[in-house]
Image (cartoon, rainbow, N blue to C red; front, side, top):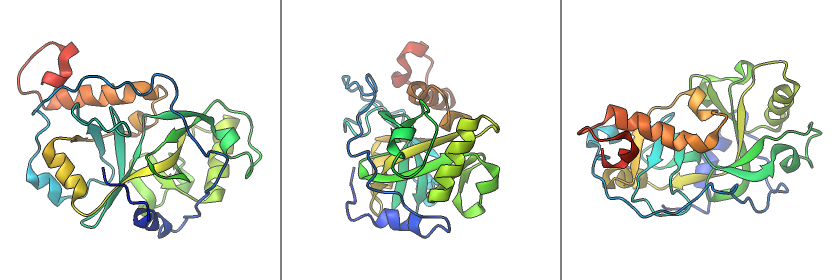
Length: 242
């Protein structure tokens, strides 16, 4: 994985109308919640092979699933929602790694928020002090920021406060996730990794993005992918062999 520390990927978000990055919060180090990452022996599999035709289209709004042979601890058994994908670059958010830092604690220096058990998610290794939010609040959904039906990305301070307040009040069916950092690729890099078999490209729904049990997202999406790409039938407890 190529990490772009100079953050040209973040500049794409800054071009969004509502972008107002909230950085340098009291989230200096985000640790994964226990058991979120367990390195296991890799299993080689070729069922992940995908055609070159896939590379001719944008993967924005799709999810990529780490293949079994991908050993980078930053991405082992991760599901990454693609936010932007072009010939020059790509960026995404890991959607299945909650940290041990609560939203209320992370934003305490900026907003007066009610106590909530909601956690900040580790979106990736690039710019870990920069936060962004995924949400389903209709009044904030603009075409240019919509990733897929029911999932919109936002970065303004106003959006952070209003969405979290609404979710905590229980007055509306608001779903959200706040992420620290993101994953980034240079020109042609994501395509190369997909062709090499490091990633599986799959569709995702808003229900899966905001799944209350984030630890099941990867396995659930992998099972769904396997169901649609089975080469031969074997027991379900060996999905990686399909």
